[in-house]
Image (cartoon, rainbow, N blue to C red; front, side):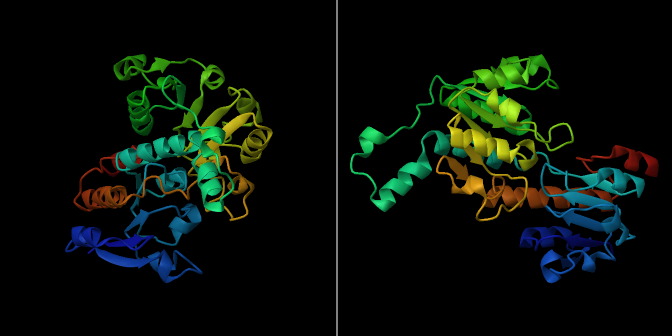
Length: 322
């Protein structure tokens, strides 16, 4: 019977799914000093955020499939896996709803200055809250989406529902999709940044997108704009963002992801009242987390059954088996 190594403790429903088909190996929490030490006999890995490079894969010579319980797979060296004949899968549909909702929550909390008014009230710092409240009304403001895949498209619908004017920049997307969603298509990132009151990022972390929001692009954002990121921390130059927030060029930021995760408690961005920060939990609602787990487990079970996994990243490995 094949074996599965789990990075995190799986929920009971996943253990029920694999019962009679595969057995569970150890997981990261069992050996914190050497997280992958129990995986030598693994045929499959259900991965979270742990980095999986070629050297790590070599420690599990029987490994044939890695299923990532999320949409991003930048922590998995796909090239190394392909070289070793290991399939890599993800769960692109699973985090859509929860992550889009979280992005809108960050947008609302930042533009309504939730952290500021909450602190003022709890600390008794003000008596005339009505006069000093500086929240934005979002209806009629422009929401600019950088990337309009599954999550971005859903955020677009939410933005339209609160009467925001929604634009998007996504050169890889068919123009017909913009029309279908009723979203204004912008042909350059610089134009989107200059015109948008709120910019929300919805891109994977790749060499091309790393530090996409650098000092030059942040400076090119509309004065007083808000930046939202619930995708990948690698997209933003955090020093440039910090400078823009301190100078007042940007009104605020809503962040669920960071260059280093989790960010240190004394991270400079976490000290600012105009930053709403959450610890990379956008997809981790009770329903969303279960959906992520089951979607990844289904990929592994499909493989064990001799069928091509639905969300296969390196299809050439599967094709070479035939």
